Image (cartoon, rainbow, N blue to C red; front, top):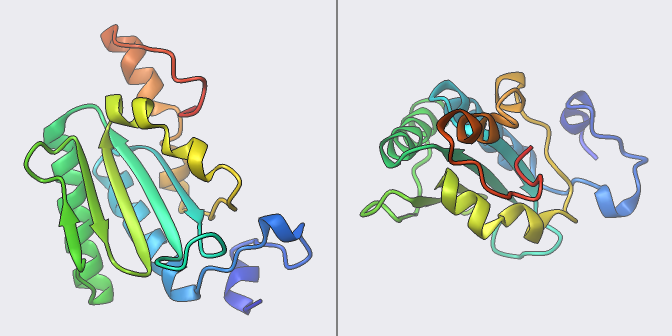
Amino acid sequence: MSAGREILGISTTADESLLVTATDRSIELVNAAAQAAADRLGHDIIAYDVSDVLSITDAFLLASAPNDRQVKSIVDEIEERLQKELGVKPVRREGDRDARWILLDYVDIVIHVQHSEERVFYALERLWKDCPELPLPEDAVKTRGKAQEHAELTGTAGDADGELS
């Protein structure tokens, strides 16, 4: 385990099922993307280390927004920030036409930015809940539960089984 991961507060003595094995570069990309999403008011930002269960990528970053325009804005900010700060571009971008669920594939990480309704319906957290959660910048962590708050304020609250809280 690298010193960088220990600084992030990831224990090297943790239960093996919760051991983070994503590379330091992947963690750096996830943190930059999470901060960009938080800066554009993304909701419920969370990242999972999927490196032990998938061979195609190290981490998934999930974020959501209450409308299509904001989904696109978050994605644009993530792309711009990762290009400017870390010199990387996605190898693939999907979902632009409807902007309900846009996927950015950076090989080391895959970013899913979803409209809040798609986030609840597809519940990607349920698929990856057994994978270790990656630590994120404080601004990103503070976004947890914002989708539910927004839904309650706008009268669109549905049953999310607490997955977004």
